[in-house]
Image (cartoon, rainbow, N blue to C red):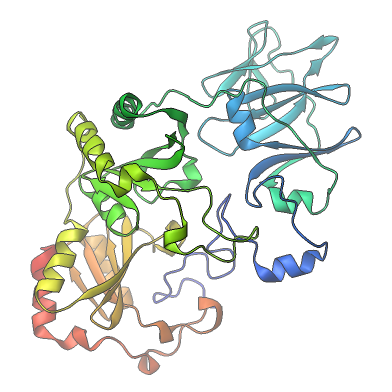
Length: 413
């Protein structure tokens, strides 16, 4: 394994580089190692839960159920009063005995903290930081935050908590997204509205909201750049974007099997009609016009693709890079196939940062903040962790094509 190799763009070097909380799919080598038969289908395999293993038995409290309880679940397991807490917009959770001395506390969310009936303020770690109980700590349960399949495999008799409050809408703090939700609420029935988990936000997205409109799940994103919503949408089917805002369809059922290993055909999936009809783009445009945030400008990816196509260099694939695929300090990146050759297009915060990376990498074209780097697949060995010797890699011949180089410089200058 070659650490910090200038040609290796996966900062986490192979194992775990594609992992994030709630990622779908149970990998075959893991599933085969379980050897306990079928997965428990009461929840989706990748559902994020608070798994508790105590004398009263095994209990799973799904993250979404804590959110429905306004991020503070007060319940009883067996005869034990317990509390499950979650910081809004995150998967940071904790589970505790809610008995303090001879009192049984009832906790309610207040911002990113939790208040009991006396006005004492508690953190998600079960520590009191203000009020009559300051410096006290709640006794933690034996809990872990993980995905459903990883817990129920070893605790098959797990019970599942369901919210009694069932609150499914929370105020959206981002003004642009709040305006989009307001308009959508006038046009359809919103049955879920809460923040997208920070771990699930695309690169450069500063906020997101998860919605269910007329029964169809959607996610709306607000990006830092003036054209970055359009760029993200261009890389994702069944999505739309205008300026800094974007929306994507996220149906509940995308796979034919419980391990999420076999994707359904596109025409078997119930994509959100608001996106398919183009109606959501009008909503985003209306919300964008009300957005007062200052967004830095950049070359639109769509404009670059059009320029390549027009000049006779067809772009046949575009993919938005995940955080783990970006080299530090790149802000955003795309994988493209231009003509027959794969490339990485990276944008850096300054021309100097891009120039430094160009000098380290080679086999690229640097223009201002942008770097277009030849990315042939044969450059990597097994598991994408080793790079072959430079002289054994077939770099794109377009690097020697003056017409192509001039076009890249003209597009991104």
